[in-house]
Image (cartoon, rainbow, N blue to C red):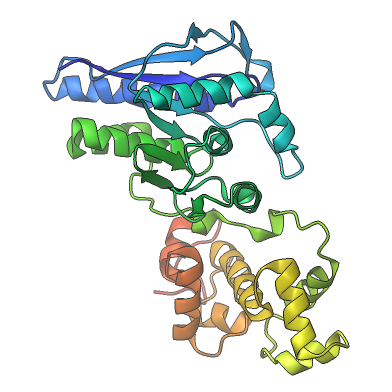
Length: 335
């Protein structure tokens, strides 16, 4: 059986670590497979580009090969921030978008890492498909590519030969799935252990911090959000909230919904969960204590809301994200 040809598309401004992350993990998997008696290399990796020279993020100069036929084309993400002009970046990457389209037309499976999904969508490969990307840029992606069925909480989404992943480290979630499919679960599990990579993640929801997502032109909803943030423990009362801003309940819901894309109650639940995450990470309060601290009288109801937002129950979240210096067993901690 011939080795799978995996090409990584390098381009100006791409993250160098995302260029090498997948090939490096595949190399580790090859060594693991050899240790289990499989000595034929399963993968042939290369760094390809339609350009002669590529300078990645941070000024790293990459050695690249000319575009060639591959079985799998990996498209890394590019250096970006919430204020990045993504449209301008895409406009400068026309040769890369064309290369992605050509490789797909020739039968290659296409994989994007993080905001590399913008380039894959620009090539027309995600139209009508399910996809994911970094949660920080999910809103911008959804506005630009309304014909894509975005699943912003997912880590890895594959739909008819096109795979997209969440931000940065999700390249390892993809690579482990890829190794599991081609080398079997034993090799994938051993590779994950050797690399200290979590092979049990299923969602990026626990990592989302909506406070980092820019919201230009949404002054009214921002004012309402600030009030809700400052009154997390207060029982939700829509008429009282409307009175606070001197509008009717209908006007409040309409203006807030138009600017924020959700109801004030939905935002309040998210804000309470955000505060609860901080308390679970940094204090030894019981789950019931945290629930009360953020405005829930019923710990069971709080646990359900928390799980819907993060994919984890409060105790599971604390076990995964507790910060150093907070010790189980201290006064007030849970058994």
